[in-house]
Amino acid sequence: MVASETDTLGITEGLKVRRPPKRTQIVDYAFPAVTRLVRSPVFVIAPVRSGSTLLRMLLNSHSRIRAPHELHLRTIGVELTPGFSETSMEELGLDRVELEHVVWDRILHLELLRSGKEILVDKTPGNVFIWKRLKYVWPEARFIFMLRHPEGVISSLENRKDNTTTREALEATALKYFKPLEEARRALDGLAVRYEQLTAEPEQVTREVCAYLDVKWEPEMLQYGKHYQGQFVPNLGDRSDNIKSGRIQAARVFDDTDGLPPKLAKYATAWGYA
Image (cartoon, rainbow, N blue to C red; front, side, top):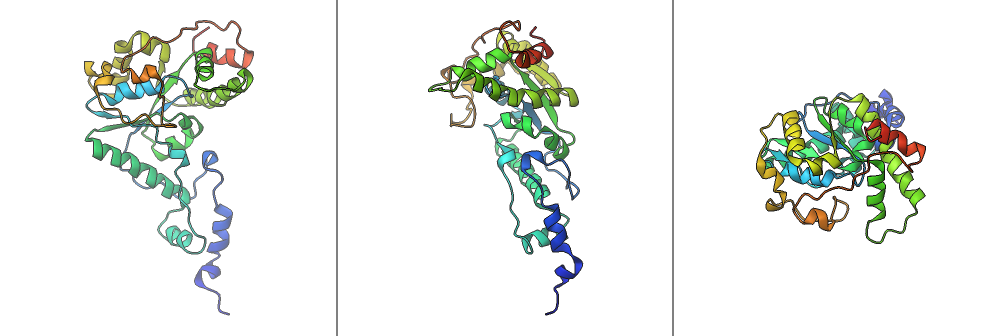
């Protein structure tokens, strides 16, 4: 039997070796990045229950900013058949990882086209787990770090409808997000926004965000309830009565570390709540 050209070149074996790990852990890339349609998207790096849905709706109420529901890019993947599509794409200088990046970029581009706006903001909490990859995919991406007192995050988790999870488990969930958030905050240039300040001084904070994004502030942003924000769908953002009210509600304020376990207290201190 005559060996195929692919077998002769050893491409099949090489592809098996290069098969990438789990999507959240990808840090090395076998193929160079292709040109992006969206050059400088904005990613909110935030834990769950941090007020990122409120920030999204305020930004989405701007005439130049499109901030859709959570996009969950890290769970949108591409599968290639070994020996066929895998080899075909390699000949084009692409692999599964870079094809995923192309799909992600196209999704953002479609949202901008449909909205007629210029700046795309994605606030998916899962972004904290892939911030390195997002920076690789979009070297000119901008980042907003959404901070909230750790007790505020955990209290919000506790107050969710039908919550039956123990306090210890909720703390573990929060810490799962806090660690990569802090790593991203220290490694990336970006703008930090505190949820408590956003609700107390929404004009000041949204002016700071607009300045960071290089757009003129618009007072209509504060009336987010007057703008269409999409349906309130499970797993795509906050669906509480507060957010549905269309009005900015005051946040519960915690301004110290009293009673917090040391693992949580260190983040409260790092974020200026001590």
